[in-house]
Image (cartoon, rainbow, N blue to C red; front, side, top):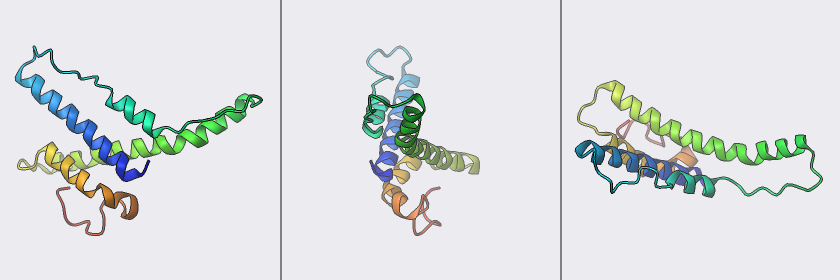
Length: 130
């Protein structure tokens, strides 16, 4: 999965979590919300590679294979969540009260295509919310 797609999916997960939090703040007794909707599991299943382990592989060979195959996917996920956190924290720490977390996540989703090719700031790092 491309990094830009992982970032978009992470933004979706965080947006959904924010919406659930907002709805629960309005009415804590709601029973129609599913905070464990499985979107993280779906993302993990789509991101993690399928690994074929030879029958005669040693424990060390299996460990090396898993580290090599899974390492990149874990880096993608951690990178996407870290980027989202950093952007949210930057706006929070700057004291901007006219920008919501939803605004920051929307900006990140819009700039996600640039992330894989030009880095998180894109070609015009001075623009945008963050």
